[in-house]
Amino acid sequence: MEFAQIIEETRKPVLAAIRRYLDSRFAYAIDDVAQEVYIRAYRALKKNRLEDDTKLRSYLYTIAKNESLRMNQRCKREETKAEKFLAAKREKLRYSEATAPESFDERDALVEALATLPDHYARVVELTLLGFSAREIVDKLEIKPGTVKSRLSRGLNILKQKLA
Image (cartoon, rainbow, N blue to C red; front, side, top):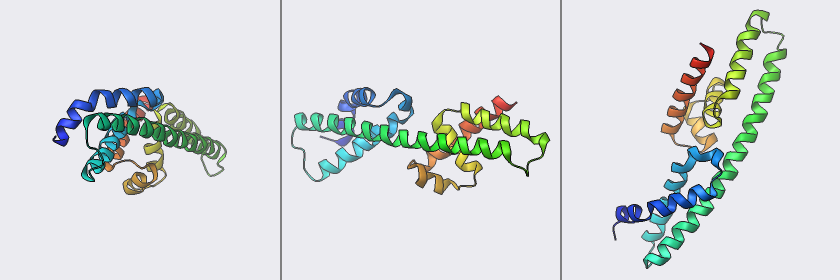
């Protein structure tokens, strides 16, 4: 059986398993989890670990469950880091003696707008504002370069709309 055919035949049950175990707050990560499921399945098939379709379906379901739970943990850790970062950033911006009084309103508006961004956009935008390179963000958040670019672009567009 061709791998593309395996994906086509198992896509719906794999996505259903991911939706079942992945926290709805992290729905944006469904594609990443699905991709990891099929990468692991491909590696197992390459090593001839799976002989029949029944084992394959069971194996894919188990991987989907485990990868979803792993993604939940990763995203929760990122949320916690982002919350701590935002709290520290708010304090720093509010009480910075070097900041001119006229710019407090602008900075408060930016901090509040950042806080309203979906977490997956906010993390990328914040790291960019802190001077991290795209490569560093990829490594830090464990996401793909294209994902960093799209989240940064979308996050900045949302910020522009909120601050306009």
